[in-house]
Length: 283
Image (tube, rainbow, N blue to C red; front, side, top):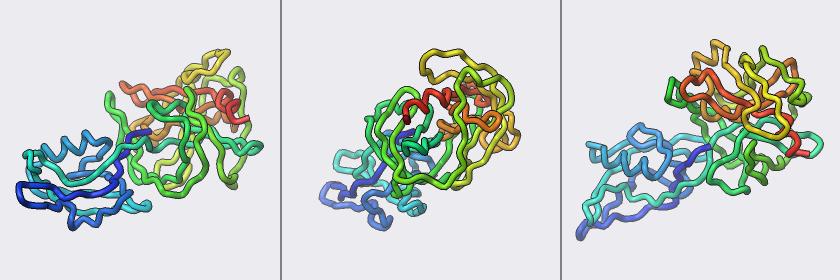
């Protein structure tokens, strides 16, 4: 999950006796997501301030997301009456972002996702449809991430934000195959797979190895230590990246865990929470 910048309005910039509209030809609408400025991905209001202050041009590129579509335009940088650079937008940060739904309990219509909590967020929210549009590859010390659009289509609600994931209820059950949840004491070291989406909405399976299986008597986010071994996934993402959190870990056809964390120094390695602990939250 990450902070996403949403545009909530535009304003005229006072410049001595002039009223400037740097956004005048951009087709910006209230509710648009500000994806990038000057070809730099925007995660926070601080990013906006830095980018416009560092820009040498009087006009820079702006990319917006609206209804799952990208909108590319140009926006002017102007100075206000205090000689501060601005682009004349009212914006706000909101906790939003891309993660993976791990499973849905068909008996209760409750789901488990992420495999870890969301820092700084409340317990309530909505689950939205997303579509992966691109990948930032991970390298040693630099985390990668999925770039995705979020639609306004609601899948369900968020009722709990806990240490081991987010939980709530879906509006309807999808037409998907079922798997058994394996108790953690039956999970073994060795070959396994993760299921995740790397492009659009297509679920794909990638090979991993479970290196360590911890014996736990209570829920903890680091029950499994894993290593990505799939050459295709390594070439595509460099290993575990942001947005993979919650990706189901499958061993011998059973759901045994969910990806929870990456080792930043070596993104081939990471951790998983046992699916058993998440499943209890959906009963």
